[in-house]
Length: 392
Image 1 (cartoon, rainbow, N blue to C red):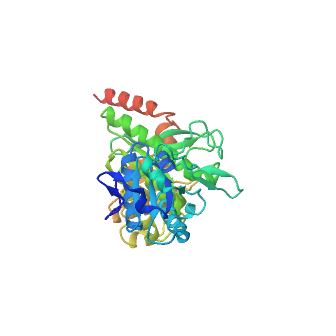
Image 2 (image 1 turned 180 degrees about the vertical axis):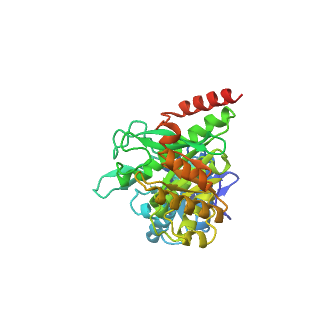
Image 3 (image 1 turned 90 degrees about the vertical axis):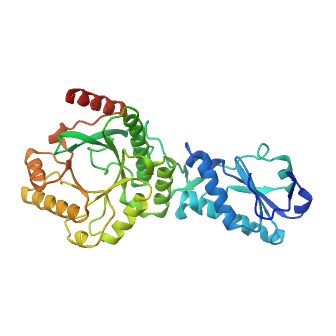
């Protein structure tokens, strides 16, 4: 347990309730935060809470417990203490759920009695309600940084997740496996998915990729898993905060098998804005690929983006001249950024020839795999092990 500095209310390990009598007390339940955001990292997230709170209210009495903390406001009269508790509450919600969500989530705290602190209120304190985020319709939905899609998302029924092989054209082997939704729309498209569900989808794809990377690492295979994330997810403060939190919780920065792929970048996006979005992820993941928004040369002249790779999606019905122009734009931008180039949606032998001649390193599409999408991480591992045995 950690207490505020110069704590005169704990003497020889015994709490002195009399020293705080008459002061307003509050119990902050961190259970919802630790449950939703702390999969595998509760100790680290609890430490983040402690450090954040101690910076906010250094003059108040704070006593941390395994599932939360007591706050006794001794710097002002009881009638003004509620605003201090509300300030702490808002700060914690912003820290873990983002600025946009903080005002819509149920409070983490309740009024407590000073006498509770001496009893060890961890066991007695009723849990605060799990944070809920109000939707546009007035209903509420769980804020879950790692939402599950195994049985279909409510906003996109029937969705399941698979892995699309991405080929290294120099080696002729599948080196990366791109997580993608299936059943709702053709591979590579997101039109069939409710935009309000995109954050949950992005988080679910990240979770599936992390599962695959554990399988790859455990079997000492050579491959990577690519987790798509929408530009709009990272452009909103709430989406960015939740996605960063998911990456931190999974120790993605120490995972050499994970690639984060930023897609659906709006045409005309300035290079500075793109660099900002890449930076939001690059601090939490080793490898970040970002979509070339268009063939505009400004991206090549706008400074370093900080991305590991750039990719472009080939339109389904594109003339050879258009495919050649897109390929040349992609490779020039990648070379200027010292990044790897990846062509997505390469569906014909003609398109593959254009991509190869341009010098693009990575590609995916029907011409390479016949439209194959591996349904599970186990299927990917099986294909890698078969390829490895053939090479041996």
